[in-house]
Length: 223
Image (cartoon, rainbow, N blue to C red; front, side):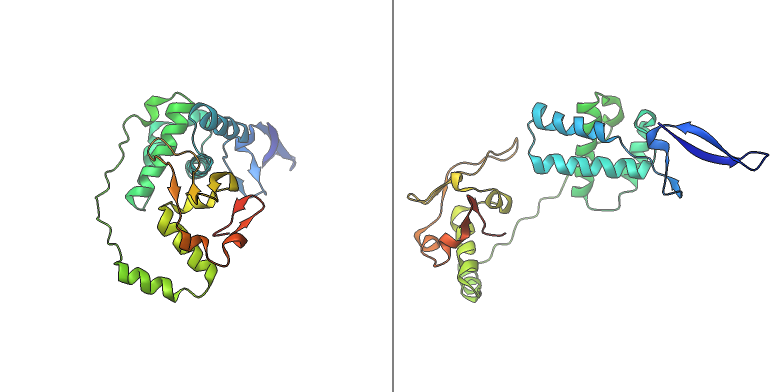
């Protein structure tokens, strides 16, 4: 709660009214309706402990929820289904972006606040399947030979031989590597992605910079 100036009285002195935190004036310019940081903190803990979501997924949900409240400019207690519909209708981006917004709103209102009524009617758009066009072995060889440094070649070979995703490689630590067996055990997967053992080949290991890519217990291929 806090006191904010309103219109001046008949004597020329400003009147003050008591308003909740999310309705206070910021910088003397306009009302900024913000979601309480305590609610977001509790939502983060809920996603981490109850839902067992990854940190990167939780961060994305929090960013989307902040964006939602910044756009609708209403306190949490006043949010209705029309606010969500208007917000989603204002998104002029790809179907994948729209899907991510709905997923975050579902996590927050349906799962965390138990307000299923607010998000029950919103469906995830289907995404058309587009087959990936992969480069040929000859094209990969040309690309590899054109890499200017041994470090980049080691990175390329590590990705090519382990088959790991970018985020999986960035999350690796020395505890995930068996250097004697050239074996990689990535961190846990998710509800939609499964991970298990992988290996990198001797050519990746024999690059001059390989041991320079391991520092302070972390694999720093792309850092």
